[in-house]
Length: 204
Image (cartoon, rainbow, N blue to C red; front, top):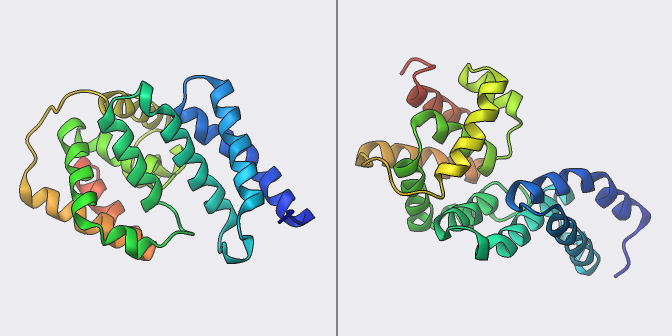
């Protein structure tokens, strides 16, 4: 089904963002370009009448394709976490169905908690799972934007490393519940508050 002019324009407007998303996963810019071209092909073959949010659909498709392409060059843990964060952050997807895979979500969050400090964890989840801009993360956590950018880079690097901490069951349960609720409803205030408390930036 050939896209209409409006549907083609939607992809064209989204393309710069899609390239940024692909390049966050893939080191080689040419690979990122290939992924975005593949997204365009898939967009043409999609039943666009059932897509509620085209921008979110295109972004999620880009993340999934980039993660698949990058798996062979990345540590398995990083790739597996990236997969569920992309799904959980997709407003056009079936968030309730995704969130109900509670065991998968909880396992992925355990990996995050094992590898990242509270502040790195907050930045990583808001950035990678919910695609927050760096400036918005800075406002939520009460940090400077340059600091947030550095934390995002460090967190992605540490996700490829070995566990660094023991996960406290109660903390894990609270974060899992808040994350799943945010994925199901799109209301992130509770998750933001919890992440802020864990960083020590907000009062408990």
